[in-house]
Image 1 (cartoon, rainbow, N blue to C red):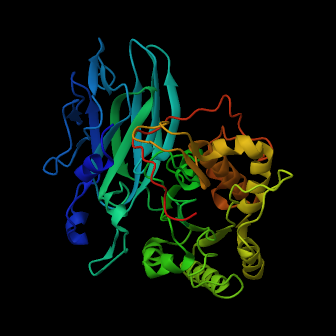
Image 2 (cartoon, rainbow, N blue to C red):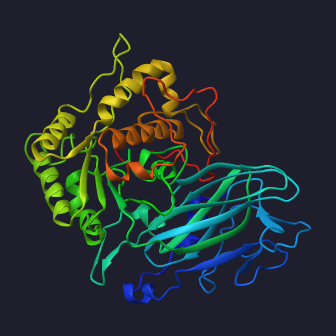
Length: 444
């Protein structure tokens, strides 16, 4: 298994002023493979690895190959593929982008999932029959740590290696048989709403397996070109540190009329040393976030934190978050703000799964489940891909029950979800990314 640092470091750029970055090209048309190149497209062969001089290319995590088929269509006559996940990265200005991918194979079947930046799910298990091709679209947010030429988000040391702060758009192609014919990237309409997310490790785009959070699953439930998610959550954050590290300032520098700001804090806020009290300072920060969001013409949405996996002798969830969720409910009522009660829905979800099966929703793995994992890991706070996906479905139900404007942009095939009837553990599967670590995220 390749190291995370060796792969991610290829995408790091030396920080320069924002004016320089704004000059970077923001539209691309890539024709993948070694065959004929479609007019107006940039050829991308399996040997086209990223370099700063070129500004795009594959990351050397996988052995990539190309297949050429007999076809008059240059875009679908060839493709790039691999027997494992592979990454393609592009230098690009900060902003929202519409991405179009052409997937399929003239002679065989294909099955491709697409993630962006730090494992942000965009397309899930797109399958094509032999000789068939499909064009899929999604909209993705690219963010920089810089707020202005003189101000920047105070990143933690580990964040400087993350794919979502690196002045690039990185796409991960994974699945049983990923076959990529072409990729097009264009700026998204400035009129579409952006949903900004604030929170901790239970919301963040987790960079490495086997950890996951609902914020990185939620984009896949929405239509391309209609709404985009900008996940500014980070592990270990409180609502106070989210402010002091200028993460809130970053959000406020970009949020506009018609946007949304989803706010979920509690896990770290309740801890000794956070400087926060549920009925005073915590409420004050929430009210301040609400006020400033509304001043921008955007819609604040409060999300109560989900329960940790702690059961009593009767198989009922024990509340370990004290009265922080209730404090948020009170603020939502006082400020007339939409509330997604993930705390309540997660109680139903964990109790439905039960003491043993709920482990599958959290990061519980025996030793040697992953490369270089010599010890078992039992984490009752952070989620597996399955757990994060179920929580994202709960968020979708919260959006629907509050009749938020973005409800109409849900994918047409999104079905109603009941946390008392979660996806079947025996049949649910998810394309795992190759970036694996057993280092726990900040917070618990």
